[in-house]
Picture 1 (cartoon, rainbow, N blue to C red):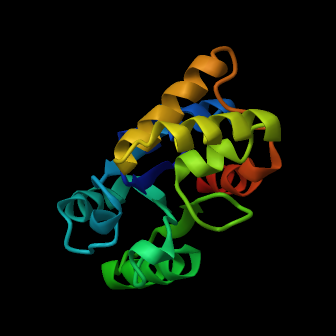
Picture 2 (cartoon, rainbow, N blue to C red):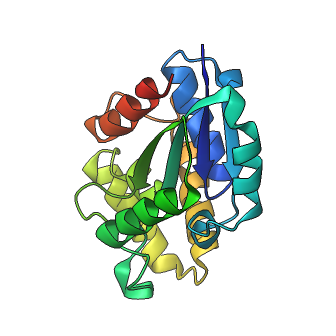
Length: 183
């Protein structure tokens, strides 16, 4: 089995991907993670993680680049689904990765094409429960984006302790397909 790599923003992303890799009955030890510490770092071809990735390419056959779509209003150049896809394509071209297959995945709410991993996860919850979580977040006035994401993750873990993610939901199909193609 060929090793594969996932380039992502943070540790929460890695933890999520480990869960879905296990769900797909893939060997998580065959996956190398390159955690860049934020979207701007993932999109920076000079980031130190890319030097590590290039050094490891002898054992890696496929690379999946994953970032959040975020909201175009906050950064008209790199945010929003289309801008993010364009930035990823430019990144991959500038990295000049040879003898490796590359894929991209943009995490967001599939209906709005905006948001983050947490938006994707929330989109897989039944509407009444999702609205309950969204209403809680709205009335709590969490100012920090990181706090907002952490609260969503914690609420989800508490509410669904036995089945952390519903990977049978169709919103995960594209991601599962890309992960299955990696090895």
